[in-house]
Length: 382
Image (cartoon, rainbow, N blue to C red; front, side):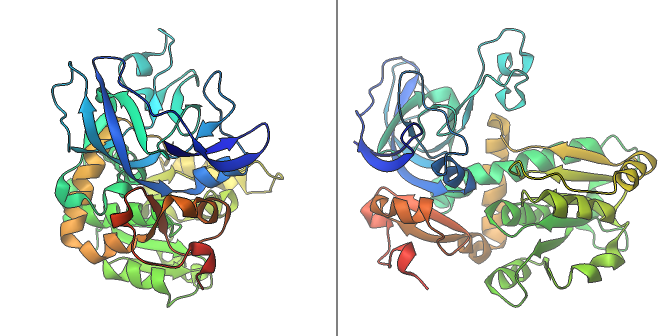
């Protein structure tokens, strides 16, 4: 079968012929991969910033944002059947008995770092025609979400972050979740940093929860992203207008960072109000040290009871929450959620998507030719 793999030792990215997997355990399912989303993690692996092949292999099949169809189920699989659409979780538990998160099925909170991740670390990913995996890692997607289901995995970032946020807010005796759905002077304000797929999915989730949502991006408005942001009732803020955001300083209940730009993130800490939460989802590369006003940040964190939360990988419950949220968002803003997917391309376009700079928010490799519209390759687009 065809697959897209990276070879760290020789620093190559290429399409390969890989042996088609077979079910070998009674709890496994065989999947036909329908679509794989391309994200910044894939591109960084293709630049050899990280990415670890499975033991004994000199290459790693990449891809972790998957949509697949079940084609075969092992004899002990009761809840899945041929034809079901599924999205697989990415992380697999570490083997250490002292890691209570992994032992309890919450490997997204692993304490040892010895977990494995599909398409990233020590396990082949989903950018292949077929995959075999254990049924317990599958999440069934309703057929009516077929055309946006490839967004489930990136949507789990927001699903997990906002679930944790609500848990944190509920520690406050006066917190009333109903206020999220009642616009008033007490409306909760949220600032999203970044208008990529993770940021916009976070913004959609925040608007769906009732937050007055602001989305920051560098490009001046009007542009395609600003129009998209406005279409679901959020406010777009560009680089030039960032200074005008000062009227909300001290009123923001939540900042959702989705850029990986640490200096921007720490600047944005200053807009947080009392009892507020800052969520980091971006992972910056290691660069030169920078000077920030640590005294001011620490004073605010202590005196205003602020919380910093870091999260990116998601667990099984978060996949279920993401699917449910996408279903609701799809009914409220169908055009907005579909606009996140720029194009679907055949597997032959992998080099342009992984090594080039394609347009759009989320580009997708489609394994079924019927799912690929007639379009120029991404490298040829204006």
